Length: 194
Image 1: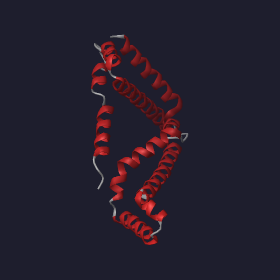
Image 2: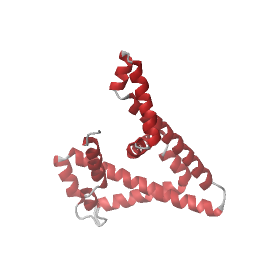
Image 3: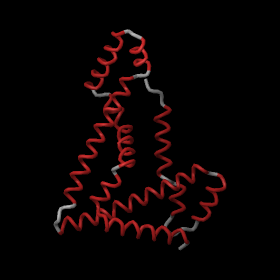
């Protein structure tokens, strides 16, 4: 095993320990609050926004907003129509709704898993370990993605240091799932909205 394997195993041990100390409830609250929570809400809005946008009642509401603004006919309303204020209002409302739902779900899960019951205590600690290890794994993939973006000698030297890893860290670096996600997002952004 090479040095990178030992570093990864050490980080897994640290994240396991943190998961056991904090548990699933506190870990979930931490990783879905603050800036992480905002990012989660934005990703959910991005993923589900187009689907919900096509619902009939949403289209009816947005059409009535556009018609009301068009009927006013003044310069300010024309400006609002030009910047698609209806879509902006839709996504702001969706973001608020997703954030409220996220907070409710996290609070309910946290209150359930932190009940003082031996079975739930074991489940809380077990799922805490799983959560923290998954977050650590995602952080590693994110660092790999940043190094791939830098490219050039930095990427080549980093890959050289990873080569020969018994844990296949070099393979993971070359086949990073973040790169696939970014390609999908780029394709979605580049497709013109009709």
